Amino acid sequence: MSSQPEPHILFRREEIEATVKRLAAEIKQDYQGKHPLLLGILKGSFMFMADLIRLLNFPLEVEFIRLSSYRGSRESSGRIKVVQGLRSPVKGRDVLVIEDIVDTGLTISFLLDYLWKRKPASLKLCALTDKPSRRQVPVTINYLGVTVPNKFIVGYGIDWDEQFRNLPDICVLEAKD
Image (cartoon, rainbow, N blue to C red; front, side):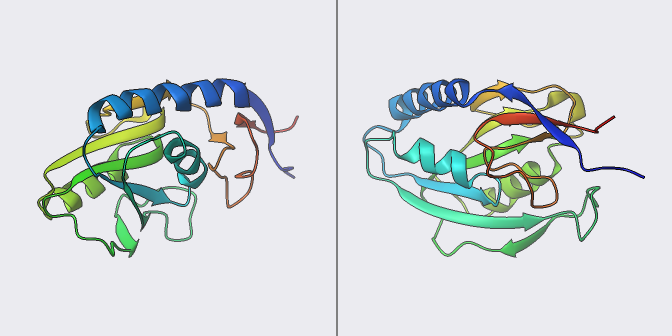
C-alpha cells in the first residue's frame, strides 16, 4: 500500500525570487527596444511567467500554448500534441518561450520546431529549471534559472498529477517511508 509522496524543499522561495530577478535582468538586456511575444507553456510556467514579466520594463505581449504528451498516464508517450494553440501571429516577431522545466527535451524541441515553421524573427528559450540527466534530444536554453537533480520536482507551478503547484518553494517529491 503506497501513501502520497511528501515534498522536501530543494529551492526556497527566496532563492527562486533571486533567480527570477537574474533572468529578468538578462532578458531586459537582450530585449530592450523590442516588442517580444512571451509564450508561456501551460500549465507549469504560469507562476514563473507572472513573476518574470512583472520585472520586465519594456513593451511585450503575452501568449500561452498548451501541449500534451502524457495522454492520461504518468509517463510521456513521446508524442506531443498541441492542446491549445496560438492566437497571436508569430511571423516576424521576437519570440521568447517561457518554460518551467526542460526534462527529456522532447516537448520543448517539438514546440521550437512548431514555432520555427511560423517564421519568427528570433526564437529563444527561458527555462526556470533544467534536468539535463534526463535529456533525450539536445535543447539550447538561452536563459536558464537552475539545474535540478534527476528527481521528481514540484511546486512554484510544477505539479504531480495536478497537485503541489501552489507550493511557494521548488521541492523534491519523495515517497513516505
